[in-house]
Length: 231
Image (cartoon, rainbow, N blue to C red; front, side, top):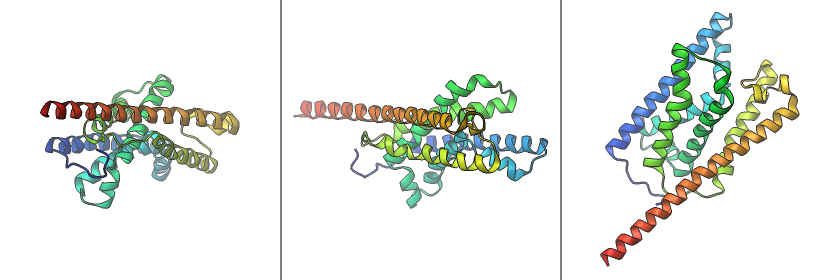
């Protein structure tokens, strides 16, 4: 493992990828519909609704997950598919979606009580898709090639998102999350919160690397024992 070559996925693995992609897209499309419907009901335009929709880290990360699952199914031999199935990329996306689920459950879950279709979209985006993608990484895409420095590189994604949120907020005057709301907290407190969340993100990444490396050692140990018995 980790030599740059990828073993072709089994039929079951490809099916799992396709089904998980459909679930991820269903959550995104449902939430998009709900967001646009809300915007129209409040007298806003569809463009404003889309700006609101794409302002959330949950949405951008679920979109990344959906693309990472879909492109290898519809265009398996493309350069994009190869990039999205590289161990570094899949593990980075797994870290990001795990962060989405954990941060939502700890910081946001108690702040509202969604019902009906809102609850369904909420559960898909924050629980079902993260769990399914983490399982996808662990069972099918984990290759034992991750390094301890990788979480620092994965941290570029939430950092860029934060910059995007600051620029977006400066233009439209609103922020998607209360813990990074400059209007309420001011820049110093917002930056402290952002750094704290980034550290949590990186710690999750270290956890992903640790699982990858432990599994690799166990694999090598089993392989060594097998060769010893064969000898």
